[in-house]
Image 1: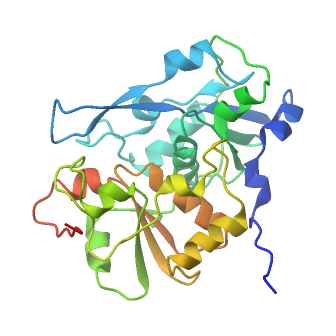
Image 2: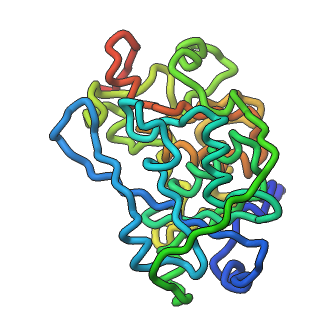
Image 3: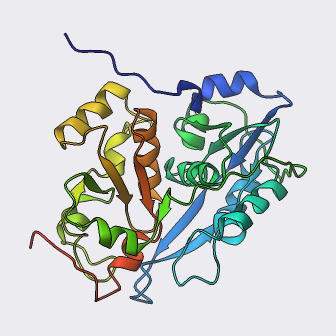
Length: 296
């Protein structure tokens, strides 16, 4: 008999219907986390330009929602990579200034995929703020269901929370290098299969970090609605890939975004030994001293 598989923290995934019923709750703060990637060949060392979705937010967003500008306000702008995590102490202060803090429950959403919302979830987890939910299906599902939207700009008053830094959630290339070949560690690549196999050179050198396995992040999502697949469906995908709950799992992708959706799902299924390689292939593939492998 197959055991039921459930989300560990079901309250951290909120449906559009549930959020619609909660609109007007003074303890609820909603944030649009959308960011746009403009893929370009203009500079081979950088596969895309990161663009704010503030104009899109101004045009249409969920009522009362404010906007979080990932690149402008929540990234290390001195980094050569698009969305590198800033110093965590500074990140915590930035979140507080933007209105994240007690007693507010934070709902994060994005358009064109939930990975932008889960990126912010992971960043908040790294500084210790846990009262956070992801809107299942994001703005696209909200609009598909016909719920109300508004235009303009909302801003929240600053808030406070007890910063608790987790220096082990986001990791750097040195940590990945030291994990290569370890049997207890899974290198989980969240990119599309063509990039994983080495059929695309989007990030410079083709291929993947040696020893990686591939679960494209979009396979965890219902293709027609953009909502997460059921816990049982996702657990079956993980089982087929040979991933076990006691594995140390290093999640990576192109720039530390898609990998956060995979990490969020793993967290919800009870995986505790999770890490995210922040700069991911944007850094690894461009460093010719680092090993790569392909299927070609």
